[in-house]
Length: 572
Ligand code: SF4
Image (cartoon, rainbow, N blue to C red; front, side, top):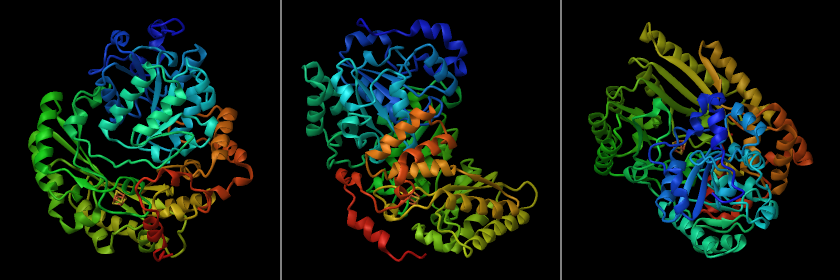
């Protein structure tokens, strides 16, 4: 530790019992983390930071993989930081402890050369200003670059493609540079180049421009440019082995097995699919070999199959049977309904692995809306899947719906009919039938998807769709959940297609006015302040005719392809 770096170990020892879960999230010392004393022997320090809490990111492993990649880079010392839970954030602010606090070293930003934000959702971006401010790091790029004692601030992660809120401000940008992509070799190149440049005496601006010149996927926040970001398949064994194991007892012994990357389908709203092309499958033989390896090295008893649609994998039956032999429990999440309807024997296989709760992505509430969303699901397949799930001992069925804002009087009777057929099937199944939940998400139109070119509805319209759908579902006797509020929807939509720096300025001012920090939902107070600061741009900023600053990034998705796809008959 050098002079000026404050060590908060004593504060932690004095305070941990008052923190959430007795300060477990800030304790450090997870399996596979470096001991703090290693810091002295490594010249370049990186604070890998999540914009959500430790608990909320317990299921994610990208930041843990980043940590491991940094730890494996010679001369680099990583630490991990998280958004403090609300109660702890208040205690830390009162005690003047920075929110950007290394969980291993209990050191704040001056001890690090780089803060690397790992960003997974658009709403998380709102936490950059409060986290920087609560850690005495300047919010504007210009000021950070002027102060050598402040770390560089870079951003990457699954949402980096939609992170323009953080880099649109030019000299006032919230971050200094952005990395798009997931290639471990490229990430390590980024870390080692930063180490060499900074230890060789390069200033911050020079470091940023060299990184942009030499690292695929990296750009200086003031100069967005075409970057190569081919999504790479991350091998299960290589990615899981040696990553830190979070202190959550319930998660011990669980591990993810990735079987494919991206999705073979192209629903017009789906950023995950459009941003992660081409779809790639890993051969069953490799998956099972790696599964055995990580079972042996990590002592796993439960495998969670990670894939956008597990039943789309050509060798799914072989994989499922193989994993079933290796692990005490195999969790399977999302699957395509049309594929399940076409191969119902897979249902029995899933049941034999202990799967008793199912989620079905029906998406649009009517045929017309499903067609608009590019959802290939006909009535026959829908009926077949419902019949399979509801007449064979399923414990819980979640039906996912999307509120597009286009719903009209002709659509709701179809939702009513869907709920009615679920009720009939349950009645036929007799006592002890499944718990059925209809969950509806307001549609956010993302850049680099066909629906990028569609105007987004006003929050009032979305609110009416949610409320009318709720009435239909509850009248049929089922639970209805709105997966996001209209405020979440509206703020996400504005951020996801932010046309210029005025949106960042409005967000920053609204955060200042309200002291808002995003945990799981957007407050009405923040929404009012944000739209107030947008001024005359609100609600016009919801339309699609605005500027497209993300165009400069050129992700490899051809604009004419998504435009053409959007221009196809709209079925509306
Ligand atoms: S919604 Fe599902 S099926 Fe459609 S493109 Fe996305 S991941 Fe694939």
